[in-house]
Amino acid sequence: MPDMMSMINNMLAPLPSDGVWTVYQIVSLVLLALMVLAAIVAIVIVLFQPGNSTGIDALGGSSETFFGKNKGRSMESKMKKWTTISLIVLGVLAVLFFILQFGTIWGVAA
Image (cartoon, rainbow, N blue to C red; front, side, top):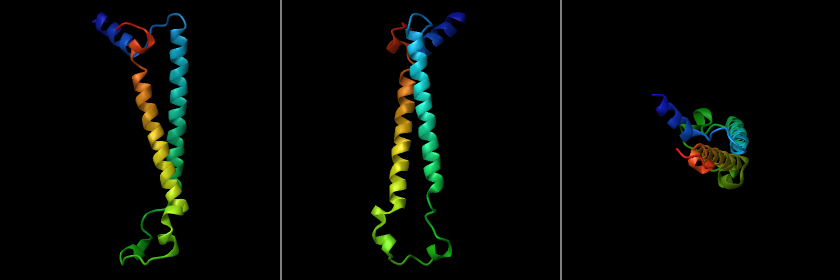
């Protein structure tokens, strides 16, 4: 069983040798910090977005207003766009962080 655990550890992270371990730690911390920042930005933007319905008016249908006609240029559409961007960045960083956990990238044989 100890051989299995050492094999799993070798697959998940480089061994603490030379400068590889230091680079691995720095890259991991930077990616984690960027993921936390992207997550906080996404949460804050979502909290500032207004709801889709405006109470009882949503039941009877909506009349065309100036804001309805210019919805693509409104603050609401910009916040939706930034929400999408921040969540895509978060997803890409998470996948990148997962890929960098493999030891073969760092020159560590599994």
